[in-house]
Length: 312
Ligand code: RUB
Image 1 (tube, rainbow, N blue to C red):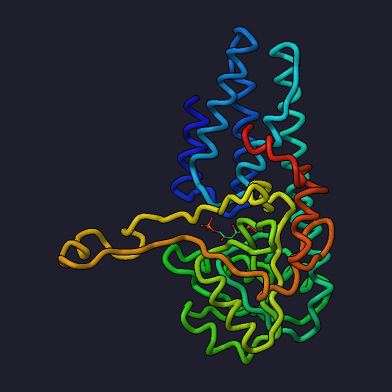
Image 2 (cartoon, helix red, strand yellow):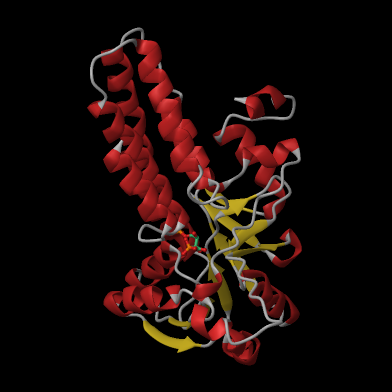
């Protein structure tokens, strides 16, 4: 359990972050943990796997890719521990491989929407969104990017490093400057932690503000999201939990203690309504947000009437 707890801890403290990476780390964590479980009864093995799955899911509440990845591995079958282990390995490796190729495929599909000379604005650090920019650049399009810092965790610094390594000209701006610079923008491209059945997108705090500014300026907003970011449980009416992180990410504890009447609110994500989103670019195609239910049904195997699945 030690290694699995370490993976869980790394996801919690954001050493492993970004919805896609979190999903792949969880699948790999479950796979490696299963292979280390010693001899015993199959029932004990299954219980240990359930415990491990719960631990991983509890680390970060918003990224739906996490429970979806865990569910993809926990579908394993086997009449013996050896069979179960083999199937877990197959499912986890399959998930990881599909996830990596999904990010590349999203790049290929999304790049069609980018024109030579475009200026793209992005927020936070999304590998799927960067894949689109990298594919357009690789395809010979001369693009530039405006990237936000993404306070309080500065994921924008990861983004500018990755774009710089790719050779894409990038400007770094403070989060509050998105509307100021919107006039220079042709297209907004961002990632997602979750997409609900009604086509809303949950992503890093500030995403909805940026989408609103883009909507006002009549600039298109593209969301890059693998199919495993779509939330089957939103079909049950469940809302996506917005992670509230520690106040020390915003202001140092000792500084905060200077005040008697001040508290900090630090939600890590927000919800962008589908009205502000033109396209969700998935690995199976670029869809309007209104088609989110179709993805949940066709690619995650949940449809209306499958309510019992929510109880599993
Ligand atoms: C990361 C974030 C990213 C999405 C998509 O938030 O909001 O935009 O997770 O990323 P955090 P990807 O840093 O809090 O995890 O496309 O890489 O899955």
